[in-house]
Length: 494
Image (cartoon, rainbow, N blue to C red; front, side, top):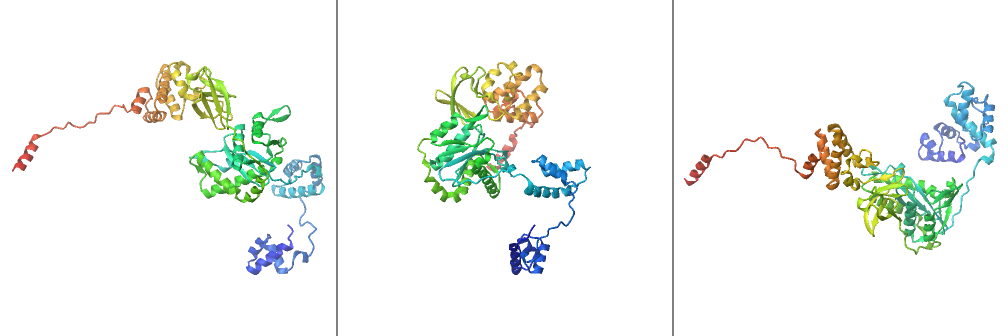
């Protein structure tokens, strides 16, 4: 590394303050030996002899450099590690791992001198205009190692930024869906009360769909843009640098959150709502430095005068004879009294609500990813307890074990009683849990299993309802003696 005059001047200045050569050299970015040389000479590099133009040792790749150049020309994208491995194959492991860094340096030098310029892409910094556009992207939070009451919590963040001012907002969401995008975008702009001219996002399935070789906007996304008064704009496929402002802000903001978590001294939160409040405070802190440019940008943005779009999709579906409804490719159970009826369903980003004649019947978590069905055992147990033979091959059988303790109880029942009674016994216990209390039933099952007793409906009922027979204590019968009372009375009369 070439030492500059500025470094030597800094080293001399530090030595005048504190005559410790090791510290002064480190502060000026040079080794102690180099610092000692310039300190002893009391000269700047420009005042000393010219730069060395010879090598201090023979290059170990000099004899095979022709092979290296041939590989670099024939395979322009090849890396130095691949070249190193290829040379060892050709020359019987002639080169050691310690020489790999030398090859990397030589390859880098060759490319700087002789490589073709058309292989390299230049990124052109852009001048943003106030109020012109906004960018939105989803970013993961797994690297933050968040948890809720000890359980892993890895929400996505729907992150929106105004490139000119750098103002941004992020909303946690369970998945990269149009509902999450709709909620995240509106959460950001309704806080500002204004919108820019354009809104830009990448080619995610939340905003676009594939048709042939091209991608087109989803109708729901276009409806959102029209409602808010913004023009949609896409990045090129695979061109995330075109969304550069939000891509950069994703990293900056997560590094900021990491520091806030360190200050908080815990990554665990009591609930999702507590996390959302903490995230909102972090965003406010992060935006403090952007206030001046934001005020300027707001002057060039349009007022948001329309009401917020509902953050759900609404549809009408018929309840099947299986007591289920199908939304897309996801299946949800509903109460059996709704079989054959048309119900109204509202799909939010994180839940699904079912209505009949305007009355909400149930609310359940929304399935995402590879999850295909969500069957509530309380919806089917009333019929299944009457048809126990259907349990063994029921397609959603695994959903009828609401917790691990029920699974353990079923295995104990299978091992402890006859085959004909196994399913009936378990279904009766499950029916009792649905009719009374699942948590109390789980406690009863845990007690029975800890005592190595095979669970049955009667034992569970006795434990839950308090009807367990009280064992008679082995206490001798008390016999009263009146003589002691006579002595006590005669003593008082005396």
